[in-house]
Amino acid sequence: MAQYQAAPLENLVDQFEKMPGIGHKTAQRLAYYVLNLSKTEAEALAKAVTDAHEKIRYCSRCCNLTDSELCPVCKSPARDHGVICVVETPRDAAAVENTHEFKGVYHVLHGAISPLNDVGPDNLTIKQLLARLGNDSVSEVIMATNPTVEGDATAMYISKLLKPMGVKVTRLAYGIPVGGDLEYADEYTLAKALEGRNEI
Amino acid sequence: MAQYQAAPLENLVDQFEKMPGIGHKTAQRLAYYVLNLSKTEAEALAKAVTDAHEKIRYCSRCCNLTDSELCPVCKSPARDHGVICVVETPRDAAAVENTHEFKGVYHVLHGAISPLNDVGPDNLTIKQLLARLGNDSVSEVIMATNPTVEGDATAMYISKLLKPMGVKVTRLAYGIPVGGDLEYADEYTLAKALEGRNEI
Image (cartoon, rainbow over all chains, first blue to last red; front, side):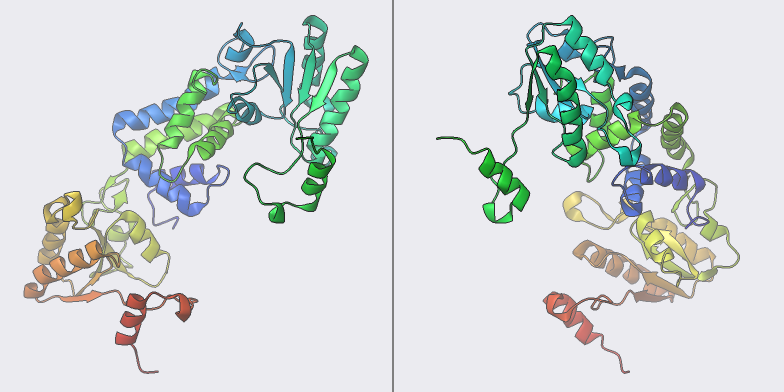
């Protein structure tokens, strides 16, 4: 293929192929899509890439992605700044936001403690979280890290740091997913769902 | 989400979401991938988009995509210019090229005749194909349009134009795919495979 396809096309396919979850065939489809765009559309796409990369930075309070000093959530007077939901990534914050159930604010760790991947507490934004607790009157910190070994370890680590500060630390509930099928739930999830059963 | 995510990020997600086969979640994953690129990498991606769009044009002979007057295949003295493989899209030409079995040249129609989608013979590069037959000493034209109603109709239409010119027109064989399972082959494919059976 290398000699067969024109270099600029080959280069674009390579660029797409580097993206997560994009294989060679999808990369080719995307490259042909780009070729079929109008000049304006192609320029808009290229500009969106550079713009996002140049303008997006971390919110100085919650470390989520934003294009200003503070992110829209941290800026909003309508949010409850006394409840902080701690998540691993900006995508996790977006997932919680999509429930439309959470009215507090976020704190994005940008990862989870994982000795295997050389990620320790110092690589996360834990210091910034502690600083927020010193300044603001925070009533509750919800640990919404992923239900994985790394996420659990991170949640435990942070809760041990926060408890001496007298702040309430909670963890997302484990259980069977809504619309799921008991038969297909794994034994650990089912055990957690039993353990956390509520009176109806 | 619109108020929640920063505008440049939102814009990038929108751009990715327009691409074929990319849903909202994948678009978000790709956007975060772009944010995690280094400045140089992000610029290379943006440049690949504009470059491909600016530099890629149709080969003046076979109408495939290229960045020069003639595509590498049409330029190559090692290819058999007397055998033309007619395909619907550049991706189909790439698929044939990937077999490493075809030593002839291509002709890309950029579509198939489809009255429902307002695509008639004049919207395809059929005129250019006829011009090639006038100039070159072509011994065979292989119709490698898709095995669909539109592809078949296009192959029939073109073969009717070519036959009076005394050129041999062939069509890709229909049959069961290699590694396939008879049980799962649809009845039309199986009927075609029976019809086209060969002595062993």
